[in-house]
Length: 150
Image (cartoon, helix red, strand yellow):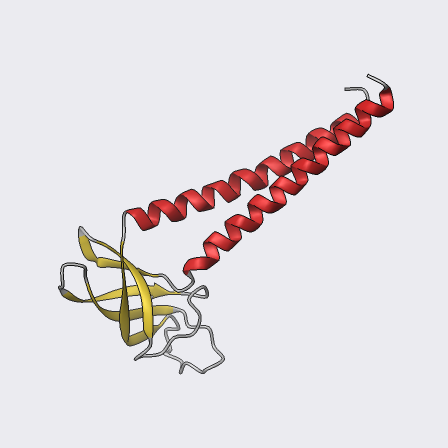
């Protein structure tokens, strides 16, 4: 390990491994979340802004607060439940149709599924970057080995 190039290869490999692990974790979390959740569409009935002053929501604003959503479970029960709305979900208005995940054991527990493909795209990006970094680390190691004649 006296060669500085050895440290670069190790650092590259660890950095790439970090990307691969985070990407795999995101995919695993998303798969687990979907496996244990009911998924359906609902209609936003009302919004309660997070701003205590109850500021008016403009079209350009990012809604943060609570949305009351009416939806039907897989069993056919119509429910009305509240979900947190944050920056990820973007601006929504009463009357909007939204995708949501709910706990079949407790349908009052819901979460808006505003961008279902975003987590998968993020995971794929992380896995691709991690793989590219690992390939560079392997190529760097091969060049170093060839240069030393080992």
